[in-house]
Image 1 (spheres, rainbow, N blue to C red):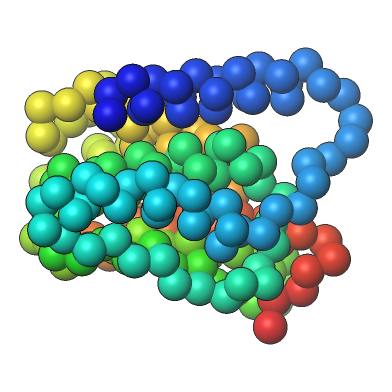
Image 2 (cartoon, rainbow, N blue to C red):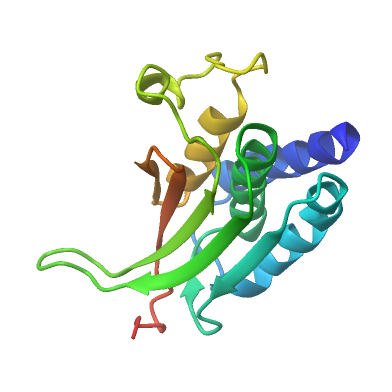
Length: 178
């Protein structure tokens, strides 16, 4: 499991480096649900091993310009955190969000579980690099946020109890949300 996570992180970092060196040409649109199906499939076994469910829901036609490896790694971090610190079922949801006046439409990817959530003391610091409330390295959520932001999105803690993390990603230009 640890080696698989290292491989995913290496792939994400390699893509960040490649992207920073490549001029011109925007990213190819991706079908968000398809990309996340691979993440959910990869994490099914660890969830089953502890008697918990991992569910993927969403709109199959939602497309984004996020880089696939960055999206998969960011969501993997959130699913891993839900496994380690959450409880009950973990749900990964994909939906389109219409833009408010003056704002572009977005793709919203939410990762939630039925656990106790994030305490009021920890919540302001969970995205700080090196901060950990559970004895880990404190790199995961900081990396997830950086990966989402690298594609022009944002990652927020939407609700503390139970925890809901939401990544807002750019919609692919040809794919207007419904």
